[in-house]
Figure 1 (cartoon, one colour):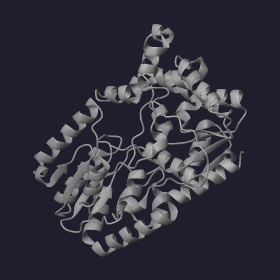
Figure 2 (cartoon, one colour):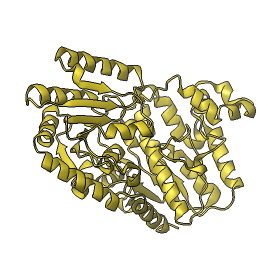
Figure 3 (cartoon, rainbow, N blue to C red):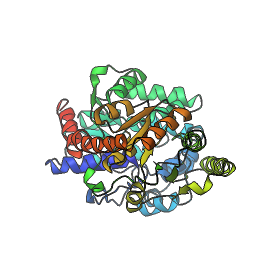
Figure 4 (cartoon, one colour):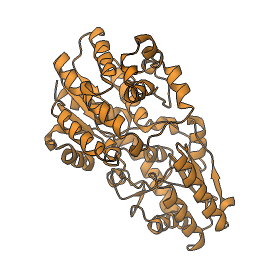
Length: 416
């Protein structure tokens, strides 16, 4: 499953290089996984390696261990191997680690931070530092202190994760984020609404925020068109409650049983935890009880080629996320492929649909509202086709790589 944040950053990096700017890129936590080849992302070193960060958190002796072993756990091949065994991303299990990383130089991962600073120092003079998200804002004070350059911080919806942390980690993390925000010159938000929300969350003046829209590569989806018959509801995202998997299944059952629409449901995406696996098993039982299991297909984890193939099997696209989405990358990909969307009226989605006209909004966490939207698309194919056409063209106009890159350059220039 390709990471929306990785895709966003890779498109921006490529756009900045194409515009003639010089960049040094430092990959953190895990190797980046994106839809296209980008040589600058190829690295022999993962900073803040997920393995090193975890071991430094759990074992005091590891913080003093020989550099060779520390370096070994920062190799991309080693990190990828570890990922094969599954990684918990549940907030309730990662509170201590999250707060420690946010504490920056005072945290258990201070050796990782110093390694980043050392690498930056050795690579020459910089004009600007861009932190990919506020969860690593602990870097900001050290960047300002060491290099005396402007620091820009992108925002990617990470506050949703922080708000779900148990106490005292939640309060501690928010306090650390707000403290580090004093060392950040500019925040980049994917949307206007989200910028206002994060200004309040971080207790930062709204004037310190600039909007840089998210982007996809529409050309990658050329030749993909929506399937008209049989009417097929599509979903591509993590198989999780947070992405509204159970709401989608309930809406599909209502669509078939209450509204008597002969539809199919096709899904693709990773199952990342035991909780997600249990949720999917519950949905299967529900569908089987209603006699609808034969109308459902789950494709599992997708690479880019199989993602395009699955998109071509959709009549409409829905990801009814429980929590507000800050970027909406999956929806933008669907629109680029000429698939109309039905999305919750929260987060960036109202802005996205106001600009694109590519579909409908439904009440958040409301299966009946989603079912009615699906019914509209099924029973009015002319309307669905119009949404698909408008959405595809609007993504090229408002959410292309060039639009995002130009906006980012304008934002950076305002603080240099």
